Length: 104
Image (tube, rainbow, N blue to C red):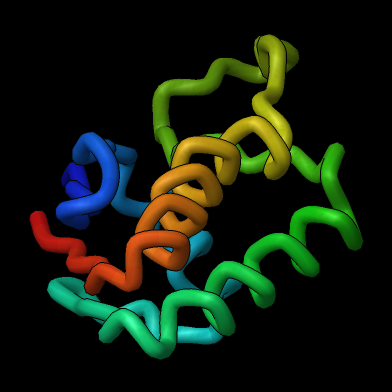
């Protein structure tokens, strides 16, 4: 499943569903999809997400996959890298006081 984040203030971004739900929860939201933040709630969600990233920036945040072989872990993508596009979207939405929505 893919989840698409949208706001009038920034280009839409699409993420793997499990990663997106993790980031939504780190924003302080329930993690439900579809979901939304009204403009006045965006700065708080942005602050929650940034705080979570600052607390553990190098934590791996990889999509769930049943395709990994024993001993074949491969490179991991950190929480900081996964969250960056969403942080930029939330920053733009907060600056322009726009709502943020996400859906499959």
